[in-house]
Image 1: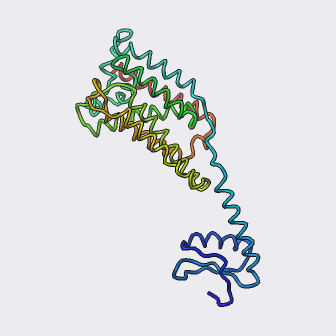
Image 2: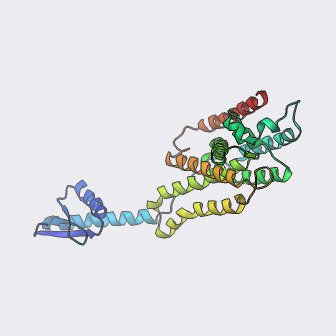
Image 3: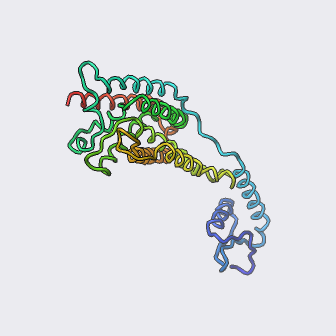
Length: 303
């Protein structure tokens, strides 16, 4: 360092000095930065000391104001009512169809998850299995938690994107289960998709909060991990157990659904969806989900 220079800032981290050096550089204040054995120092010559210190004080005040400003919550994209009503309607409609058939078609055998059949080419089963339920208790539980998780997620993503992502997470979860378990896995129910929705919400909100961490106080930053904690508790409380798919809790499918949803949620938050997508994306996503479901059932019933 020049003997005639005066230190105006020092820190153990190079990045801290570099940030303040950029402030001085923007104002054309001559300066220097170097390591001193204990950290890093930023210095200026005598005639520039007062202007440099004044600008650095302003910079620190702005940083403090920014940190103390409450973190913005996400804009509510949708209340999710229409999507939930459509979900309930379809699940209730398919319950008797799965149990007793409809118009002479057997929905159960070609529609349920059968990992052996999937490995042999029945691509539709990871989708169609989401619409079948073993009994009323199975149906009601999935309706309740599916509606709850989807409503919360619709606030973040909008109803169309939420339900398209839910269907994708359920199908991906069932497919992943096929490859993890191998032949012999039989399953039905929307729970894979329900836990997929939980994964979407959990990891979307976690990534979103991480991206806002510079605008949070130290106490507020503890809220970053809250979605992960909540998601883990719900997965453990609702999704764990033992069983073979149709008769008891299908733990593997719950976990794979949650994992698939987590990946989708993190991806959407990283890409800043739906904020960066046009408004029509919601209706396009909803229509795409219905078309995929319809195509899967047509393939199942005509195979």
